[in-house]
Image 1 (cartoon, one colour):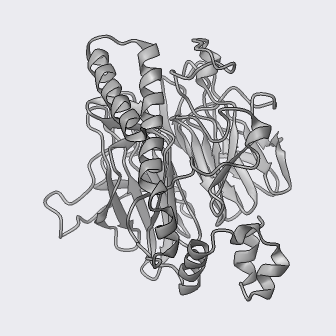
Image 2: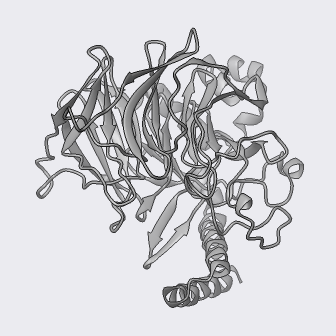
Length: 459
């Protein structure tokens, strides 16, 4: 029966794709996204139901560098009755942001013009296109929990924010409402989910803050929060503003001026990487342009100046051996024995859509195409976050398949490096004993499980 339903759904999806090539019907776009999600659910149920018991008995296999689909939909959350029907996990979206610790992933905001109304009926009010939500995903239990929703006092700027996790504190900066650029923000808001999961507080600041924008990127270094680039929908900048966190004082550290200096061009939806002294701008673009990855703008935090660094191509890949120019991609960084390495996934250039994954070593500036690592389909306006052990998670975005763009709420994970043996052993333990997270901390400690992993279970 499920196989028959799956075939019917796939046939309907093809029919809708054909119609949408000639007629742009918003309701059909929404139905197409619902079908896409249901197809994914049926595929998981068909593949997993018969293999579930065998999978638990099978020998655990650690698979580094492989992009794996995380099946969270088959896990019924204990909180689902409290958040209501249809709120067991986030809906398909783009323009959201995610961050993660070693046990939890957080998703904020996002946009979907095909979103239904809050009562479940189709509603074309523009305020419903944005998601007034902060979600938490428990990596160990594979469950989503809705922390903040429309009943909380969330700002209207819920798309293309900048977001990071500093210790236990989520920091959210900037962003735009809809229509994009009409309402922009330069407010910094913080949430501490472990202590105050229902509070998203605006930080009172002093000094000279950046202008209200969206699509900017942020990093923290030496007690400073750096914000670089962004747009108001018309003008694009790559100015450097920084907030001194102890005193909460903003200052403009560097204002770009291409007329008198060789400063890099303004952009949005770029990503940042950083080491002890420099911030690297990875890609990005404007409404009609994208920026190359063969020559990267680098901001020297100590010298307060911009420079350009030439990257080296992957010698094992056909020319040019460097990822093509792109924006709306994702980027995470990890520390390895070879130095800081940056992983870039997906994106698009306004015409072409990408599913490739690349690694850039910031010491050698050498690109490497991760041949074993590919997204299942081209993806953009998604986001990614990485654990301290090097496990990257990619959530949502717009996938391009069969000449059709569809928003998704699929979650993927990929080991970007080989972690410590204790981490692999912990994953194997969860594989063999799926009921382990339900046990009390005292039981887990008495069983000899290291405290660091017990704390992940009960974060």
